[in-house]
Length: 170
Image 1 (spheres, rainbow, N blue to C red):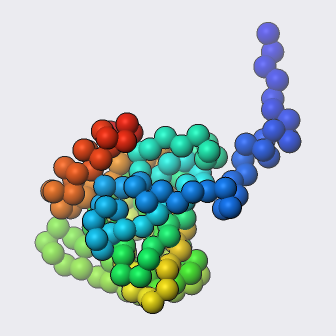
Image 2 (image 1 turned 90 degrees about the vertical axis):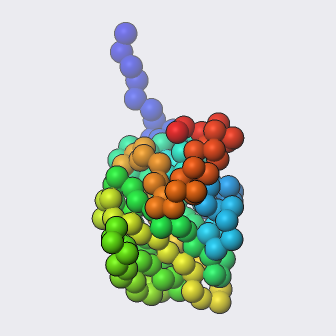
C-alpha cells in the first residue's frame, strides 16, 4: 500500500498560523504568575518550553517559534535551557541579561529589530524597560525542548506544580 503525500494546499493549510488566531497564554509558565514576570505566549511553531500541548500550532520539526507579549516592567525569571534561545525584539525596549553561577551579570538594552542568541545552559532572561508593551519573537533550537530550569529553587518547585495542574509534560 502506497502512502500519498499531502497536497500543497493541505501543507499550506497546516503550516500557516495567523496572529489574529493566536490566543495569548498568560499561564504558559510558572513564573508568569509572579509579579515582575507576567507575560503572554502566543505559540506559532511547537509549544516552546512551556510544556503545554497546543493543537493549533504548526508542528515543530527542528525549532519552536512564539511571540511573547510583555507589559512594561515585566519579563521572565533567570533560567536556562539545554538549547539556545533567541529573542528578536519586534516592538518595545527590552533589557536582556546573561549570568554565570558566581553571580556575575552582563546586560544590554535592545530595541526593535535587535536580537540576542542566548547560548545553551547559560542563565538568561529579559525585562521590558520601556513605557509600552513589548513584543518579542522567541525561538528555541529544538522541536521539543526540555522545560526551562529556573535558578530560583522556589520557582523551580512551582514549575513542576504548575505543569501537573495544567496536565502538561514534565
